[in-house]
Length: 134
Image (cartoon, rainbow, N blue to C red; front, side):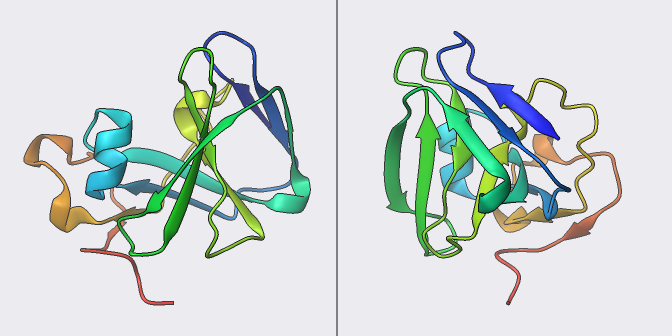
């Protein structure tokens, strides 16, 4: 079970079941939206996800070239989760919004070709210069 929410508490979410993937994305869009060198993300099945509170959405073409929808709290601005139009069966949870992020163990880093030198993680994982081919 994953639970989380925004900084001010206006939005809460939960998801049951295992994470489908755990990555760190270093695309320029993730860097800009987070103000950091990359965003840790885990994927869960949409059918296992529930959210309470109102969210605001930002829709752009993501670093993958595919539509990206980011959901955030309209009160405090916390980035919470994504609802990718290219994979409507998924929800991507931004790990920083989890109540307990200690269980996050990324197995891959994406868009490392755009990763700043100071953002390299010390843990071993697969690294891809862009989006892995499906």
